[in-house]
Every structure is written in structure tokens, then in C-alpha cells.
Image (cartoon, rainbow, N blue to C red):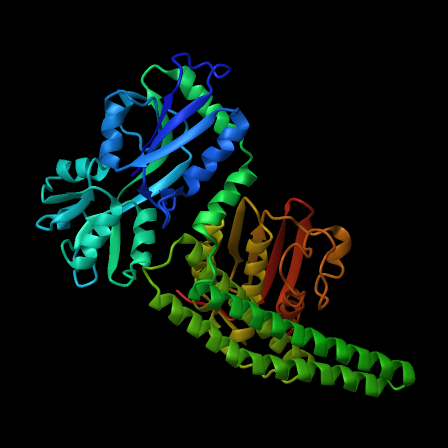
Amino acid sequence: MILIFFVYTVPDIAQNRLKSINIVSDDNYPPYIFRDDRGELQGIIVDEWRLWELKTGIRANITAMDWGKAYKYMLDRKADVLETIFYNEERAKIFEFTKAYAKIEVPVFFHKTLSGITDLKTLRGFTIGVKSGDLCIDILKKNGITTIKEYTNYESIINAAANGDVRVFCIDKPPAIYYLYKNNLENEFKYSFMLYSGEFHRAVKKGNTELQNIVENGFSKIPIEETDKIEKKWLGTTLSQPVYFRYAIYFILLVIIVVLFLLLFNLILRRKVKEKTKQLIEAKERAEKSDKLKSEFLAQISHEIRSPLNVILNFAGLVKTDLAGKLDADQQDYFKFIDSSGKRLMRTIDLVINASEMHLGTYEPSFTEFKLIEEIVEKIRDEYQMMAEEKGLEFRYETDNSEIIIMGDNYSIFQIFVNLMENAIKYTIKGYICLAIEGDSNRMKVSIEDTGIGISEEYLENLFEPFMQEERGYSRRYEGNGLGLSLVKKYCDLNGIEIKVESRKGTGTKFSLTFTCYKATS
């Protein structure tokens, strides 16, 4: 860690009388401050103080030396102001600190041949290279680690590591990365934990708040755009994206291509249907045939997309597993985005296939006797309760019925509940979702009620029409394609289920399904 010191040329520190500042600094902290091949000082600190000069009219004369000498210079009261200093309680007894302006991480680096270094306890027994006067020395000693070898600066520690004199060392992350890459050692050393992290401050000796204000006010006059420009100059910009980000980009591009492909063919088919209708307006049979062709085409294309999409989702899962433990929060969000987008596309494909089968009459139901509550209702409850609670909604399940046996098509009845439950959760921002069962052995009613955005009275008349969505309420600010409720109605008709809906705009919606029962079980 580096410190920069300022000596004022006049005793009176009032800004209108202050003419120049002498700055004493560690000269071995890249990219913040270090020497070029000619021995000239350069880096973020140098450039920022040049801006400070322009904003204050006070000249900043920068000199630099080894950290140990610079620190002693300050303790001998030959300097008045410190730059890039970490705060701790001991230093707070002798310094006044300005606001923090940068966060610095301090890892413990070790040679790639070593293993098992995971925390402070595992450092015991190793000789650890450190820079004289660094804060990490105090931390190591407080934790019972005394096998410490001190060096005058960071570059000498890296040289010692390159020569094999030390295998473990503690260096602030910015200069460590710089010198490791400069010496082609980036693949020879690694780190597994941060010893500590600190924030850079500017500080003056205790009680000198007037000087503290002059320093801090000068830097506050520098626009953020100018400091960002300096940081980009010395810290650079990433040239390539990490591999997980590329996977996310590839997947998104693939999804876009698939969607555009479907839209393009759909537009082409719509145009052809329109042209045929215009030319042969009386040919009702041909128009119906054209509509049937579109449904067959969509069903076939959806089947073709489903297989590669499954492969994409599976490989995305494998990549996430391979990178387990290496992903930060943002990276985990990328994979969640891939998973949720893929499942959404898969859900759309399933709806297109099911709607096409119902339209073409190719869906073949399998009517059997089964226990409605055990085989469908309770599965729906278990699957969607967690989804509702993750969204912050209360999930209610109300029933006092014994098990009921009905005759119906298990798959299509299950899809009825899936569509209604997903809509309830999707369009409810706060409140509750209620799944309730009531009735007797002759007739049983299952209802799904929410406290969501509700449906307008005008739109209720078109609720079960395919591809229909309400302009406001069930609108385009929510995902969906308008197929779900039309399929619900068709599946209800297929199974002889009576469906009713009650809704009020802004209050919520309740769907009721009435089943004809065969018998109750004990």
C-alpha cells in the first residue's frame, strides 16, 4: 500500500496564501504511481494531481522514494498530507481522513505447486514476503504468523518470487497483477482468499482540518468524466468477454434467429392466405385448407425446433456445472437468464404444438378413471406453491373433500391447471393465490383465485379466443402469446368440464372448474 505526503511551503495553510505542495510518495505502486524506463514518475496519482493543480491554482511538486523511508518522513513531521492511505484505528489517532475514493483488495499469492492455502491458519509455517511497513504485517502478526520476510518495495518481492526465494507473498492486488504480467509470471502464481481489503483516503495530521478541507475540496472540483478518463488510460478496458458471457450471447442470438424464422414464415403464410382469399373469395374450402396448412406447418416447425433447443439447454446446464464455484452473482444471473429464456421458448413451442393438434383434430385423448386430487390437484399445488412464494405471494390451499375419482384425459386436464396457475402467478404482483376444492361425490368444483390485475368486462367476451390479449391488464408488458386460455377452453370442452370466470379490473380473477364425479374414496 502506498502513501503520498504533502509539505506546504508556508506555515499558513489558507488556500489564498498557499502557493505549492511538496508530495512524497512510494514510487513502486503501479498503476497508481511508478517510474518509467527513464525514471520519470507516472500513473493515476500523477495525472490526478495535475488536474488538482488546475482546479486549485496550487502547484503540486511530486517526489518519490521507498515506502519505509516515506513513512518515516511523515512520522518525523516533515510532511503534512498523506495520499492513498488505508484507515485503521491506530492511524486515526494521528491523522484526519478525507472520504474514501477507491477500494483496494489485498490477497495472499502463492506458487501454483502449493495447495491447501485457504485462510490465515493455513499460512503458518510458510515464509511470507511483505513490503516493509505494510498493513498486512500487523494483520499477520496478530494472527500468530511471524515467519515474515520484508522487502523494500513490491517489485523486489516479485523478483524474489521469480527466483524462488519466497513461494508465498502478500501484495496489494493492483501492483501484484502489474508485476506478475510484466515478468510473465501470471500462470505461475495464484490466490484463493483476500487477507483484507481497504479504502484509499487522503489524510492530514490530527487536528489540521483546514488543510484537510483544502485537499478534499480541490479533488471535488474535478468532473467525474475526467477521473474516469484517467482510470481507463491506466487500468484499460477488457478486450474479450469471458467464456460464460459468450455462451449467453450465442444462446440469445440463436433464440432471436429462431423467433425471427417463425415470424418470417408466419408472415409469409399469412400473406399467401390473404392472396388466396382475395383471388378466390368464394372458395371457402381452399381457405380452410390453407389455414390447416399453416397449423400443420407451425406444428412441424415447432417439433423441429424442440430437439435442438433441448440440446442447447442441456449444454448450458453442463457449462454451469463445470463453472460451479467460480461464478460471481452477475455470472449466475447470466445462466438464470439462459434457463428462463429457454424454458419460456420451450413453453411457447408446446403451446403451438398443442393448439395445432386441437385445431387439426389430430390430438388423441386417452380417457381413464383417475383420482383428481391426488394425481393432479396436489401435484399442481406442490409445483406452484414454491413459485408463488418466491415471488412474495401467499399460497392458499383449501379443501375438506375426500378423494374423488373422475373419468377424463389426464394430460389435457393437467394442462388446464398448468395454464390457469401460471396466469394467476404471472399477473399477480402482491396478495395471494388460492387453490380451493368444494362439492360432493356427484359434482366437485375446483377454483383458482388470485388478487392480480384482473380482466376488464369488455375483454371477458373474447377471453378464450386464440391469440387474443387485452390492450391493458393482460397486456404486452407481460410475456405470452394468447394461446393458453384458448387451449384451456378446448380442453374443458374435450373433458366435459364446465369453466366459469369472475373478474374485476384491479381486484383479481377467479376461474372455476366443475367436474362430474364418479365416486369418492375413503
